[in-house]
Amino acid sequence: MKMNELKLVYFSPTGTTRKVIMEAARSIDLKSVSFDFSVYKEKKPSLKFLPNDFAIFGVPVYGGRVPALFLEYLENIKGDNTPAALIATYGCREYEDALLELKTEVENRGFKVIGAAAFPTEHSIVPSIGSRRPNKADLKVIAEYGTELNRRLRKSESFDEFDIQVPGNSPYKKYGGSSLLPKADSALCTLCGTCAKVCPAGAIPLKEPKKTDHKKCIGCMRCVRSCKQKARAVSSMKMSILERKLNKVCQSDKTADIFL
Image (cartoon, rainbow, N blue to C red; front, side, top):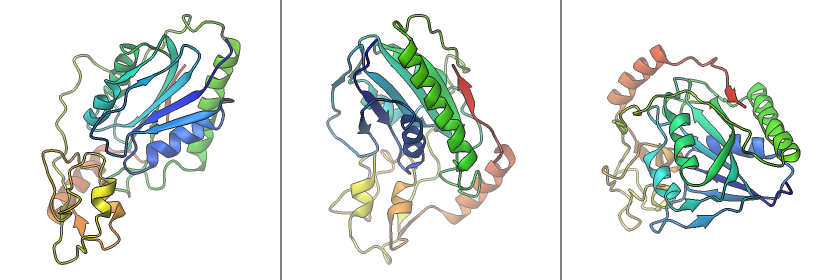
């Protein structure tokens, strides 16, 4: 089959998932178009992909699940038996039901999954866990995944032969959200509005950036990382408790799981 375009559909508040998906895309011989849902859009765009497009869907794992915010965008995306690959990134704990949930949601919207992978990366809340991952060795594995996907695209006339199986349970693990939500320090905040502009959930009012709607906040830490004044942070006590907990259950030397 002569392929058309590579569509990169991802959610990457701290940039790690984007780095992984772009590395895989380098090995695929197609012109690419990106749809970055890390940028808040009140009106979710409608996208329709062709049978000869190739889509890669990439998400970070939140509590063993696909981020609920990404699923809202996915509601308006349709394929036409369009081949697709999946990428889940996770902070060296477990990805649990995330790949299965992503595969199910993608296939329910008209896509045919021909590959899936889960890559351990630096933890978004406790960066000392999986520090600086993906590293050079990780990027090589990610590139090899892209190379295999490219081979399948070039050699296959039909994608019906593929039956990718991924781990996970249904019903999925209960989505608990984040208990660690950033707040602004009024004394340090200069009202620059950077945090409001980058918040993927629209939880920070542009006119009142010292405020945070914690009902909308997903605890992605993008506002914390983007604030040059260091005015946004989470509770140091809660962070200390979470860090001790995560250090017990995370393994910084985890390896990728690839399903082809």
